[in-house]
Amino acid sequence: MVKSRRKRALLSVTDKEGLVELARVLDGHGYELVASGGTAGALRDAGLTVVDVATVTGQPEILGGRVKTLHPAMAAGILAPSPQDLNGTGFDPIDVVVVNLYDFYGAVADNRKQGDLVEAIDIGGPTLLRAAAKNFDRVTVLPDPGVYREFARELDEGRGSTRPAFRRRMAGRVFELTSRYDAAIAGGLFDDTASAAVSGSPRHPLRYGENPHQGAWWSVENGQGLEDLGLSRHGGKELSYNNLLDLIAAQKLASDLPVGGCAILKHTNPCGVGVGTSPHEALARAFACDPVSAFGGIVALRDTVDGDTAGLIAERFLEVVVAPDFDATAREVLAKKKNLRWLSVDAARFAQATSGSQRRWGNLVLSQEEDEGFPELERWQLAVGDAPSEETLRAAELAWRVSKHVKSNAIVLGDANGTLGIGAGQMSRVDSCRLAVRKASDQGHDLKNTVAASDGFFPFADGLELLAEAGVTTVVQPGGSIRDTEVADAATRLGVTLFLTGVRHFRH
Image 1 (cartoon, rainbow, N blue to C red):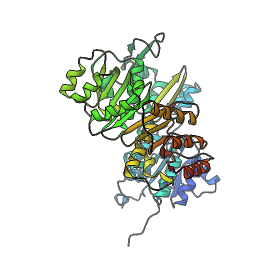
Image 2 (cartoon, rainbow, N blue to C red; image 1 turned 60 degrees about the horizontal axis):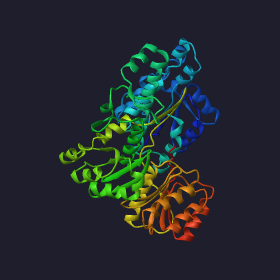
Image 3 (cartoon, rainbow, N blue to C red; image 1 turned 90 degrees about the vertical axis):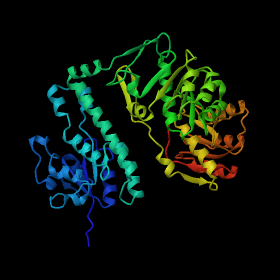
Image 4 (cartoon, rainbow, N blue to C red; image 1 turned 180 degrees about the vertical axis):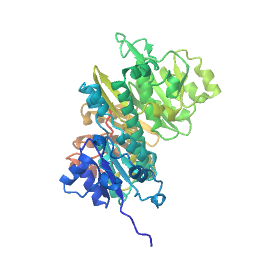
């Protein structure tokens, strides 16, 4: 009989936010805790039992702490494809790696001297992270405190284990993190290297920015042009600053739609989404949501544009059309539209090249990871009402996917074939509800037995009451308000089916 082994977690962090809570979760699921230096001290101070890294390696820290985790016991424990592969080595497997890096960014911001910057370069941390990410088939890696809560849910739902999809997503997060970290070192310590990198990415001038009085340029990091983003422009004028903003938003939404989906955007907000058995059907449905706002808009399709679809495009004034491809007839039709910009896109390459976002105000730069996927749709909860039909579920999921791309506060009304009304960017959620209903009413859409999605929770019952009065019978929202019970009671009273996702998708 094979003796079961105790799982092991390695913890070595600079940022100790959430560390103790995470360690308690691991301990509660039976994990042995292995930690180094200050991390081990913090855990012991919290009353947790910890094994020192030096005990596992048989080697104390040397060179003033420069070398502590760089040891075969650590590398083999993480990189072993299976525990059996370590038989005869004397090493034990490591199942979870919790590591974050020395704060090199802070050292640069503090204008520290070169010697201090050198000491702020983490070597062991990136090595452990990359090793764990490489072996994501077996090992779970947690590169920052922002993922601890989700990891805890994974352990609870998986009885101490994580799902392959979660491990894979965390691995991708690691390689993005270490890439940015290396770039920060190159730019913060080796100015000549940073200059060389910038010179390899030419800036392309634009006629102007958001407004004619603003100068503007575009560039592709470590690339030359749009082709490095997976884009190929076939016709029309050069893309403007606003075109590029809208194109990115449109393609990101299209990528989140089911096969056969089509999105129309204006000022980065969706004004119509359709799903059909052909791109022509999908585009026609998208136009039907709000044809007035679609004037001068951006269209993104999931499928190859054919002649019929190109004909429908040619009837309208649009700024940009982006799709995986255009057949010969479509190319012939669109070539006659001299000002229309039409581009083909490699969706996977585009998604990778435009992952994450960054905004700059003078010397202040805000960066964040991409709001990727919809894992919440695997575990959303039916809070009020009877289980709806498959068609209603498709409608609710589609509206929820669209709401992620609508500026908050966001309300999306629709059915299984597309959107019927969209309320975007209002300062109160009830005003977004009013706007979505009015938009649908302006086009003569009947909202009886339709669905609504809200990107954030309803702070009061008034928004849901307004939607129900308009005919909506199914609502999907994150939940999390102190008045959730009040909203649920209103749904019960009004006969509205209510789904809670537990996840919000704000977009500012």
